[in-house]
Image (cartoon, rainbow, N blue to C red; front, side):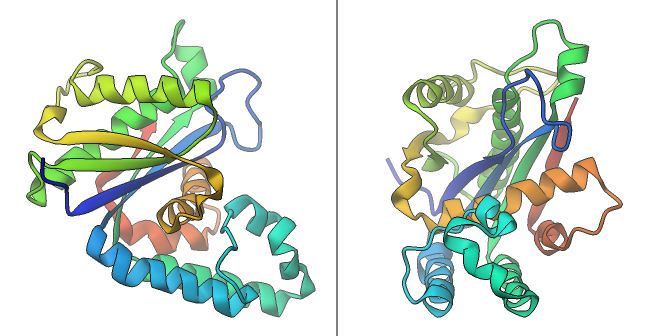
Length: 244
């Protein structure tokens, strides 16, 4: 089996649980980042490592969007002043802007979903189906038919990871298609990997930076959203889907 020239990193924002949605962020976002392995190894990883060395002096800093936004834990140094904070955020935006990636994302409105369907699918499953459809089209267009594509997820827990893997494999074997479109996922070989939060994966950290800005853009489209505008050119054709 030939490996794909590309790799996928997936991360989410919000919880897929439908009960008691957060009124300030009542959506679930799944964001998948597709990147050529050569670009990942030669440019993205060194760029992210350089940013960390120049910011905190070592490369064990893990770029968590939530901690950056709240200026907490390893990012408490952002509380020192607006100038330092803005300089760091601008460097993060530059890192995203320079990344050679294609983004496929799905935003699931949890309140609407629960209201519309008596027995709704899991928001995670809906988002994964949408994203894999977009990735399939892109990878086939890139000449990856028949190759093995790895999709990396941040591990959430043994039960959650097992449930997601089962659904992932159903999609990959054309057993979970729904709606009017019936894509043939077996044109590629798909393999999920569940990665520990402490792995310090550059790809997962990049995906993490994008997920919440995508959700905020859907929730409040008129609100200024610099982070989304930076990643907007990375979106695949039809690569941002909302449901329902």
